[in-house]
Image (cartoon, helix red, strand yellow):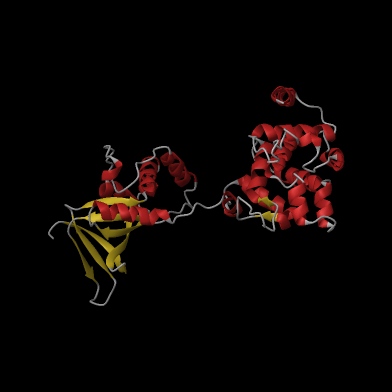
Length: 355
């Protein structure tokens, strides 16, 4: 080949077929893959259609984490003539030569590629950084479509809980795991990996449940130095004054009984405490420890009349909606001596009309 691309590469074998791994400067991605936006019906493509809404999110991730962003490899097919020139006959290291007439087609990573191209327009210092590309020989549309399916069908989205456990960039996620980890009962009975608990789970809560509740606590406020001490104090007070939790901790109440006969382990109730927390967060003169003693007077059993229709349907199932969380919060507010706001009254009036 007189005119060709030359890539330093590693040759490997999968499924009896050779493939190559190479590192490519980000500035060359546009030359390799182009920017073809022509519409092609899905049956004639080897990729899903580009979702343009995802691109700014990934672009901003790169630009906002300039010194720590990470990407997995792109996967692409080479439609054209190529040859591998090993450093020596037995080596998998060498140079991959690809004819300049060949086409490179992404089969996995089109959104990463598009976002990188946008990021390059805003930050030219990215030009010399690299991304790995896994290159396969093109064997026709059907094979490329199967490759796309195989690469994506076994991918599993991480749970929100484990994302929040590992995320060091989201300040509220960091604070939430510190708060949960700092309160013995919550730490012991919060699953930090799953978003949905099985019937026989040894846990009562998920980390994501507390993360969402904390979002309701602070709403759009920034995570200042005051947020973590407030949340630690607030959830500590809540935990101290929930009678069924204390009964369980003292082994006077069984796990099955707590889960099945009371609503206090339900995610919707934790969200209600999120709304309640916002009141204390915005009313610095209110003392959570003193007010939340009133929680000890609440009947958390499913059979209690105050929960019927509010958070429990006529068939006994839990209502999981924002309205239900507000209605539960209203009951808690009245029990701890907090006057209902006009917004709270609106939920009560709507509840009475529907009832």
